[in-house]
Length: 252
Image 1 (cartoon, rainbow, N blue to C red):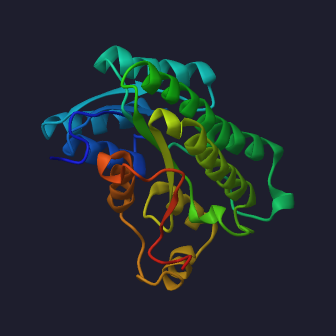
Image 2: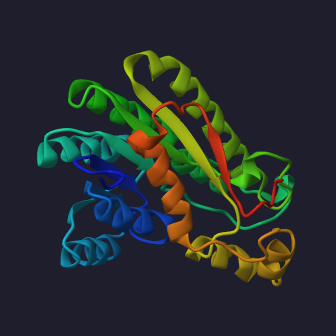
């Protein structure tokens, strides 16, 4: 059987990068997928691509900083497909690199609203939906290898991702007795628009990241999505509370 055969999946940040790769992969692996993100045209393009390949997908516009949007998006999964089995909370934003004292209040608040509060809102809604429909299921949050150590280039971003790790572990302990598993992945250098945005402010970034990665390359978004798919699948049925590094050995 495919990894996610007969599952209903919800993916945030699904318009591009890791989220889009995950939506495509989950559909190929047998899931019915609802894609969520802020940008309608990107969502439409990925949804149509999945359908053209024979998959089942739909999309909903969702701003993770808006609590009503998040709840409505999760409700939309249930109204479309009748239940929710698995969710990949991938959506995130970034701020310009620089030391802690140069992070603006506006950037800090935006990172909090999307990268931490948005994850919490999504998890809360997803757990309620899984509990009320499928009964058991799995959630994967997208963290970062930048959450494990001091992160002088992206201090606020790293702080929010470290907090996501804590939420993940707390949720795993809380909801494990109900059969709801909660894990996170922590990608390293991945060739997405987000990393290219960072590189535009930090010339030579890609070379430095590759040099510090034992596999000597950046990841394709699909490689990160593969890790999320496994954690969401029944093949990882005894795995919960894990923050899985998917970083080419960069933190080894």
